[in-house]
Length: 420
Image (cartoon, rainbow, N blue to C red; front, side, top):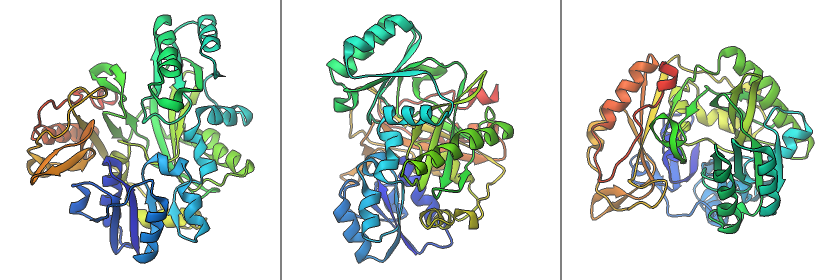
């Protein structure tokens, strides 16, 4: 079948790469794609949020499956739009995507169905939020209710930092309307991990556990980013803990959404904290994570397109989902200044040399006058696969050393926690 991937980042590059290698796939298109994706698939200049334009392209090009990478089209209802026209799309409905689109919706659902998560309160008044924070004390976590490109969370270790976060989100509106409502949570102690799963709304099949690195600098210092690297499998999520997460978190939330009239079909991403009291939900995303996708999909041994189509058709239980017994590491090469203000248009060199060692996924690149240049905060994801984690780390960093562009920054401690 022909497949259309919607999106333009490193996650979409990884999806395209895996789908191109699916035995059941004939041709892969990507809208709008990027220069790296264009080397594998046919890129078409349709924006990810142009539901009508995408549907017209699907009908006109015999597309048997559409795969949506970013969260915004899903939260805005692209799955409903396609479903109404009988076009198969891998991704949850608008109602189900509220799991990511509204943190207050997510927390209320978890509370109603007794799914383990942090204690929380919801506020639409800055003064009331500040009063609650003063009462609870620090450390404490402040989250913008809506979408904020993975940056709408402040883990405040001091009271003044927490109060300032309320002002920046609610008064200064640094995240626009996403910060008009805040979720304030207790600070959970433990180690974070990500467990993604395929689901058709009934059956839930977990993927390989991964761990993201959100902070910009080594040793988890500095502001949050969209993710500076990842590795899989993450040893903190043992086989026993994965079974516990599947039984107490993943399956219950899919069942809860179904009881609420929201059939969830697609990729369900659980961000977890492994606490002394067991795994608890930090957040849910309604799509593949970025950069977790860049380490999880290279370990998938089964046909990705076949799995996705089974999710859409409600028959996931019929399809084998198998994994390679290897390790994968992704290092994100970011623009100088990211996650704050950064420049674009810096010449990128060394891609061909890096590709001899590892996979190079384009996250924020463009071509200008025949030269590959930077065009985003996260520019490239360098992914290496090897028989064990230490070897994969070495391979990824060796490949990364081949890349050059002005201002380039990257973390030098990806997967170090696991190796310790």
